[in-house]
Image 1: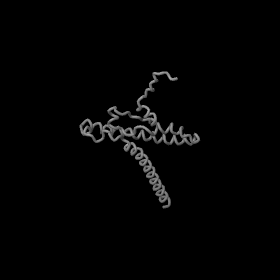
Image 2: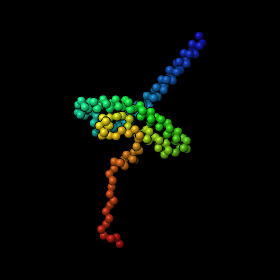
Image 3: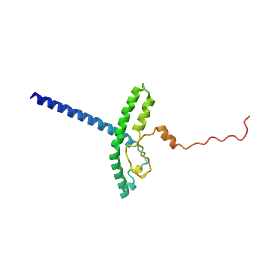
Image 4: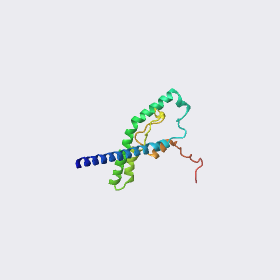
Length: 153
């Protein structure tokens, strides 16, 4: 009888550990999904009349299917990059630059495929780009100020 009680206790512990792991994974995945959803631009095409056309509905269905296939790989890559970046931070003596060189490409990037991605209007970035690099590409190149016509004495 004692053997059955031990087996039952082990099974019960294993179920609790599995439940805990599943809860942590689901929490992590929801934490990855919620910030990108809230960061969408207010002028995005979600909810417009163009989405109710057959091609719009097809694009949304295609983007949902693409997200279902794409998201687990991106989430696993981000999780691995977070762990490796943390280890790099620890083993480099607390060098934040070393950790960020791993965290930024692995954690930033596209998590949800939208119809704009499928149309080619927005790029799909599996590897993230630092904010300053994204901002620099959006800023127009400024020309230098013209030189004065009169000689300076």
